[in-house]
Length: 326
Length: 313
Image (cartoon, rainbow over all chains, first blue to last red; front, side):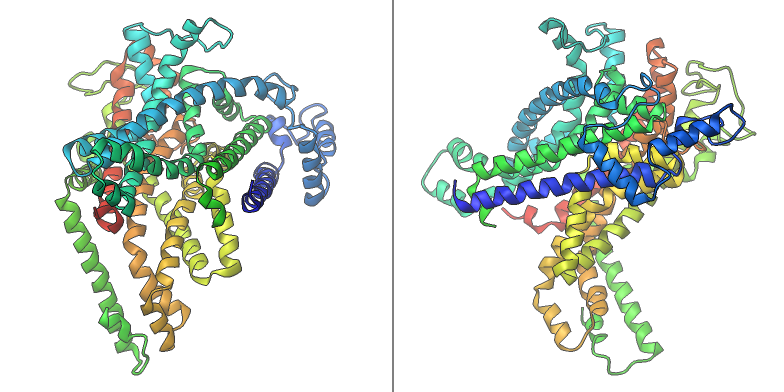
């Protein structure tokens, strides 16, 4: 590996570490500095007042256990120490007293399976449509694809999920509306995933269509495309060998950039189809006002996005060595 | 641009002259807006989008005319809950016996107000950050660009949810939460534009004849980026409306109003889908989709008009 590439990767790695540190800090600010007294969340009724037997003592005990009676910078250090030991806190509603990590870990797999399958399908479909639209820019097929993409993009995910569930599970009873169980046989899993994945794909393919369309439009004005045409290559070969590979490159950056957005779609899909993933956990945590759980789910999701971003960046170096020169 | 440039040479000052310059500048903006507007009307996608948006604005403004008093008000009549559509209730009634048609009509007010407010805040913040970073460069730009990238990385929906959950539901919570996640994209666009404008000869010229930074930003940079910011603002409105419906569905919307997202959430909580009541959860979802689509179409058409890169070939 050339030195420039190595230096580039090193710089990337440093930036990832810095970003994760900033995210942890942001999380601390959001959940520890802003809402005031966290015991009020834990002891909802009468917490902090003396009308509950032992309420005040319990509150003080908790304050000192969490180090909340100490100055804010010391709290931050304590928080970081816990972070490094993999202690993200204790859930206050969901299986009370359970460490948050033990609740999140099994759910992460469900989310990754759902998002993974759906994203690959979205990229395949979206890229294909974008290629057609980009090549026929301004023609009826471009307008049709653009309109379909815009419409799909505009439908709220949670509502689309409801409609699909209503039509296919209840009215036509084609797909079961049972919970996703990854230990079941493949056919059952496919049936359980069909509707959630469809919802997800409808919501997210438009992004790839638009990126591919615009990227291809750019590429088609390049000099090497004129050369390809001058060499007398067929339209198909011009596109397949010269235009598409170059148009796909910026897509990787944009996809990496949108991983957070992609993950966001999972929340609604999981809530509607009751898939036990990170999104449904977020929903349940919000509904139950379980801030430690919410905080941990947010942290895991955000760090996951940063790491995925970094992987995409590294991948890019191998696909297009020019980036390290910049 | 002749009248605007004259302002930089401060030969004859005085109130009258200042006023003339401001008038000229305002006229210039209006002319450019009018030009863009005419092109927008000529594009099929833009016209359709504009038609949808204007339609919803009229619906929201004349809600009492279409749907009578607000279903939550004391004057509104409450019927038996969960009625099917009829001539008295075009879309039936909800779980509290409120007229669903009226709820959907009034829901347009919430979506538009939240969408416009959130978009306004995010555009102001994003433009300011992008302008300052791009124009001053060096360490200021480094810090602001890093901050922008950092906020862009955070998955927006979980972030919105977390902010709303911490601040507690309410109108301003919704606005702030949406603004916090959407300013970075504006900042990025503005910054890259400013970086390219900065190197143009007219900026150097303005500086050579003694114009200060504020003057250059106001008279030479902002007018050039304004149309793009505007196109971005339109897109932000659609994202904001989308996000508002989502927050409401999550039970994190403004509890004092009834938005489309909240109607769907209540329908979901009362499991009306299982009763086959499509008229309950159908119309509010269609409304969100169509309004978001309207803004997206306008924004798409604006970008085709304003982005010269997309025009060539």
